[in-house]
Image 1 (cartoon, rainbow over the protein chains, first blue to last red):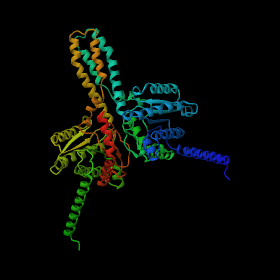
Image 2 (tube, rainbow over the protein chains, first blue to last red):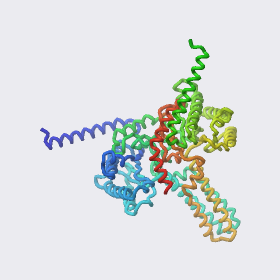
Image 3 (cartoon, one colour):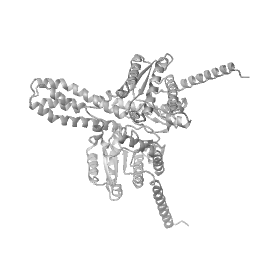
Image 4 (cartoon, each protein chain N blue to C red):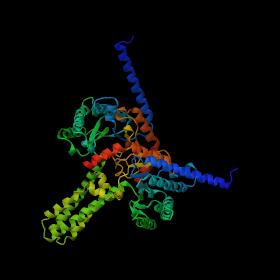
Length: 295
Length: 295
């Protein structure tokens, strides 16, 4: 007869066995190259709630649990950087009550991350929030800044939460910053020339010409995502193969893997499959990278 | 007994039947929405040659035939814009003899396009070459400019040949152009202010500040691809799901379809499948687009 106690022991043993098998599997996989950076588009939370007739918000809650276990798998596997698309700038166009719900959920989960048993302590995580933070409401912005400050000395692993983010916004921001820097560079010479009585303005115009000298390196330097190397794998759940304005600049040479599973259904099998595919094409992609560096 | 003549008639009849069936199929598909713009990454020409033990260049020749029939299918189906990734800026790093072979092939095929029975006449094509044309050798640049000039009044359909192109190069080019335009905008006011004796330079500095006011619209206006709407479908052959620095900016919301077939093996079935998938997700994507416009 199965008593509560023996049931508990059995489930404990089973849990231990699963963990043991996972560790073994990861050790086998880690004999090959491990991606340094994996990015996720967490698509399908709302569809998951609909599919199971759950309340609208439950999909996102299930999505958060899925995120926590996926992050655990990634860091255990030895992936250093994980980026997630948490909130697009376009999401602000959703119903105000949905936006509010998502922001409240974010605030609640941020506290959990920093808690004693949270991911931050467990994996020595440094957390960045990537995007146009000025668009966040005051309490959320304060919370994300607190998290970034609190984790800034952690070095073992990195989590990048894109929120509120779109790639085109990131690129335009980087361009503006590059222009602003160029302007600052010429400001002093222009002022000096004016003070010296450059009344013809020819010399001032010569300085102005430097402004169009913005290049790839300038723009790249000012990308929000400049704190991490480019992703090696991009995974989008729900079988969608669009990038939805996520890391367009950084995924130019990164394969997209889009399993049919909704985000809360995504599990270790999908991750393992993506990493095995990465290992298969690793020699080819590495050769391409080396070629680029040697140029 | 099958004589040469009856064989000829049979194959003519069979060819006619295939064309008839294709027209019927296209008519059925055209009852749904048709993508306005399809973009292709023509991957796998060299692998095709290897697979069949052909000489290295034969893969690209087979690839060209495949392109011609794919273009025919697209335009017959009612797609107005087709973009192909013909030559990446990174391709210049290939062996010089391969680069030369590809450029010679390009010159030869450009002549064919313009010929009496070529695609240009058949579909009333306007052809654009998209990318950093300054990187092309003199005869190739002259040829592509001739084609663009010769077809500039055609309106029925458009072919965009990306060559030599990368998306990051396109974005940086657009940024430089935007900066240059801003510089030109402030040049006259600055000169006037200097002439009026703005010796303190405060007013000049105020003008300089405008330089950092570059926005999304400025950058978009200067994209090489600004001559066409964003693609509705991106198809990459050979099962690869990377974008390889192709149309990163323009495919933010465009699904990627990556059949396993190598480029010379890609045929009407893959196109039909991609279009049917487009039609399936059309209502959702259109709703998203409308939302964006109404903002």
